[in-house]
Figure 1 (cartoon, one colour):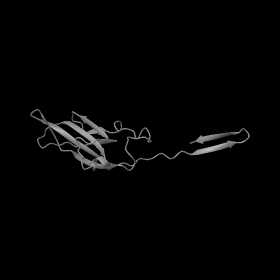
Figure 2 (cartoon, one colour; figure 1 turned 135 degrees about the vertical axis):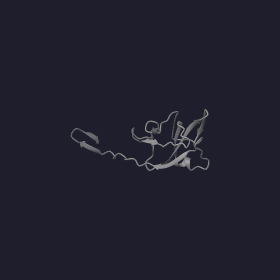
Figure 3 (cartoon, helix red, strand yellow; figure 1 turned 120 degrees about the vertical axis):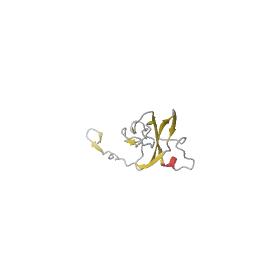
Figure 4 (cartoon, helix red, strand yellow; figure 1 turned 90 degrees about the vertical axis):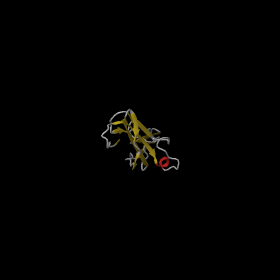
Length: 130
């Protein structure tokens, strides 16, 4: 999974830096929400002309999910915030934050099939998990 953006500047100045944050719905809809200070699920920045960032390796795994899961909750709603910066006379000027809402739908694994076989003559049970 990745997040990308398109940079443009009316002066034709080059992008010098960028920041990307992902917030859960509860945080984003909070009356005290601020992209600069609210807790985020993901934060990555760079001082280059990149226009995309991969999310997979940066989000924490959620307890009870598979290793390949990126930490998003199935059916969850999230908000990505992106801003970019340029230099003008050696000063950095940041854009306003741009937001996009997205939801996740994760293919859940099938529940395991558990079978119990009884061997009365040898007085033992065998459990098979598939």
